[in-house]
Image 1 (cartoon, rainbow over the protein chains, first blue to last red):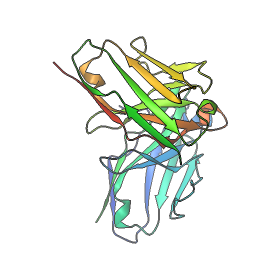
Image 2: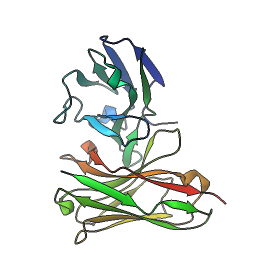
Image 3: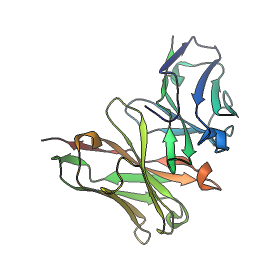
Image 4: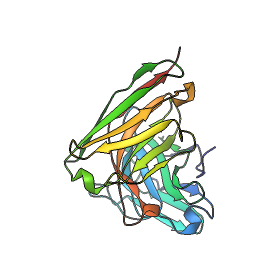
Length: 111
Length: 122
């Protein structure tokens, strides 16, 4: 059971807009700690996609955006492409656990 | 270019020990906290341990506290994870990950190594 809750899977057709949810609690996201998002293609290492709730590292297309409100955060992808098919993880810091926590991951299928 | 290269994984019996290494390049290693993050086969990501850039100050997940020890040698740009009393549930790919952020509560993992596989089995 992950500290941050993500739906196991989402799917969408090419060109669509989809969102991923990440639900935490008052000891992590709700405390004000930043949420970060990672993309992982199976068999490869995770890659930072969004940091500080809504910032994109250099090289990440502006089709990807993040937001945070209360104890939850969201990742949105617009103009869905086949290459976006991967697992997506949210991450924050938890004061009660004194450590960094991840969501269980959401598998994106591009139809 | 930032690079992190892990080594030291392998097959070990339950109760055994293993030491992982991660050699960093492309950034000033001593200026950044670095963590180990693991991923069991078919499962999600789990943070394991973190050490500050200067080497003073460490954090551990409850699942490994008392069994694993993180350390670093900044003169060799190398991060280590000494794993003792290994259990089957420690089997995973172990990633070395550089951290960045202004405050510890806002640290992200901005660069990752390719991972090294640890299998605990008799």
